[in-house]
Image (cartoon, rainbow, N blue to C red; front, side, top):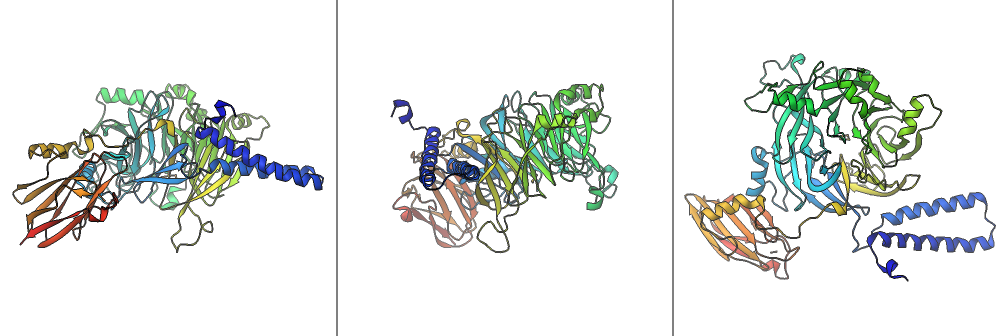
Length: 630
Ligand code: K7E
Ligand code: CUA
């Protein structure tokens, strides 16, 4: 063995495993060849069997081996974000965001309530679209942004600690749905759509007058997590994406006629894609051409039909997904109720905004793919993969061939249709929404799983299917049951993500807690102290496995007690918890972190608190007493 090949990177290890399996199979078949002469069909079958086995082997990650990709999954109406390892499809972590979480105390701790801000009282959410910040069209590993359709919020996850660190309720809108990031030159802005149309001033005065209804496109500062401006449009808004030039954003609209019933909403044969010119919007903002509403100071620009800020491109019929091809050439709008995907040439948009061409002139092909096209993903080799919700298939098609066919050339742009199980919504390829689209893996997020898993009652899991797209043919290699309800996901090469092993003491997530401690004259790294402040009591405690720094503390009946714990352990993976029994509170305290939680001491007597994250052989003994004096 040469020195080079003895170096086992995860990549060549995978290759070696493939080769072993491949040769094993050939050898076994070789024996058969000696006895029975091979026919052409037998060779073909053999090649096929080998190909699918190679796919399965590639997806298999041995115990102890690391995955090549991170997957960031929306948790749908569970409100969370999940981290997956790909290709193993192992679930690595859950990040509570819009939900509340018993294990970590998310939604209950003082720190999480501060992050949730004005929506701290809301305990649920509906997360759809997780997308990572980018630099020059490539993932930069800094943030994940995610929308909450249920409460019109946008949240940010910091990828160094994989915790939500900012949350924003978007004013003037109902239901933030499509969300993406500016790709180029970097993610200065997060863009998202207000889906449901309503009067901007929704005080009841015009609520039955549909002509006053509107939807807003929202542009958010990614660092400050504040709305920079909103753009009023005609029709509603659904999904969105950005270009690779830093010039245009595009959103689909499925209800251009402003129907209020299902029948009305699906009546028009054509809806539209709205294209936003960033430069023109910024100029209008600078020139003060906006209004504000509802007592907030968020500038609302007018991008309705006839405005200089937008263009409306008619496309068939209730379009849904909007995806930019990684070569930066096209916006693709999936037809949903039309069997087509509309290909919009981004290099024609300058002419469209200069009124040199008509909106439909930008649509350079509309390939027919099958029933219910929802979302399109890309492999970086010129192929597109579109989910067909009604057909329960993924259509693989070649973009250039589709354009050539549209121009009259006799060419079949459809490459393959693969059955998926069942009714796929989003799909996503490895790094497929960036310049680094590598064409290795495709995920199909199937909404129904019916007969694919052991039955678990009337409520079924979703089915997240992993498909190998590295060869000419798509190969289904894994069925992944998932709880409600991954809408969208991204697949990020592990080289892009560098999470911390410990917390650092200057982390902004608990900076405010430390400021309060400082005012109380407490050194959180050393002191165990009880500070009384009227009816409020702050209990400062350290923890080192397997002990809290405080064995007991005393408060009075009716006190509002805040327990502030600093985990002094410096060892990776030694997380402690704090739970006050019979008081409905518990939380996680990571190594070197400070966390705090508040409850009312409403029962006299002795109450044990304990560590609820297994940390040590004496974890059960890691507890103490609260005395509540009547
Ligand atoms: Cu198609 Cu909310 Cu992106 Cu669901 S959305 S599928
Ligand atoms: Cu500390 Cu368990």
